[in-house]
Length: 351
Picture 1 (tube, rainbow, N blue to C red):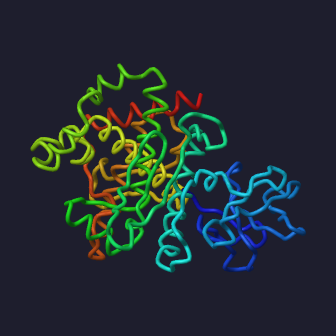
Picture 2: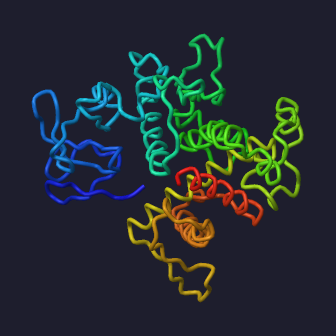
Picture 3: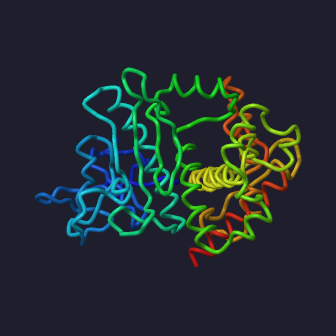
């Protein structure tokens, strides 16, 4: 993610802005151009100051204050590139559902920012593909008879509305002993399963995957039961980004995939702010200068060498405010290998 600028007055814009705080212009996002833009009304359409020769319309979810993305007026699409993947949304006539759905949509747009920047395949239900990328955002049954589980199955990603309720999410995090739990983290993890199917299973990469992550043919139900009964192995920190990654090779991939997106997107924002670290304590391990585009760099070590000092500094700043670490994880050398595998796979696909 990065900072943007209003074309009308030059004021800084953030990804979630729907209008400019300085000049009051309506703001939308052009996903094909990766640009936030001020817009002017033009009949039923809008003129984007970042692309004045085309005409745009806001996503249909803009009318629900749940999206700020634009789509070409002549495309025939009423939903934007992110929202056309929605299959099910909750009953938004319920105020709590409406509130939580908007939070989920905000996180989803940040996910799609990264997926588009990485030029990853984004098949929609209308594409005719057998396993398009589809989202169901579901609420538990009011009488408690049905509990929604967040997960992935054959291209369908289900997100429980409970993940948008701060109190419920924090309770789940604490009860499961997790160092981190966020809606965006769920999106990044679950979409990792989707891209395992696309890039590994369908991409002819099973042997290379197994050499690094292990045999995905291991019984998943047994692995899940064992993980929750016995926990992670005592030496898990030597090879994995998280305890949950030890559960099964699929989960190791999905956890590593999520961390890759965490790292790349946060580094881009740090670069946009011009953040550098030059610690008073003289050590190269704490110094970094982010002068590259994390989405474009070809060497994963460039990312890691910048990420580690940045995360050390960010964690230290959070502690000064009495907050949990921004990035409460350690990346061992074996996990760097796995991040590099994902990095190379993504970039080979883009090429």
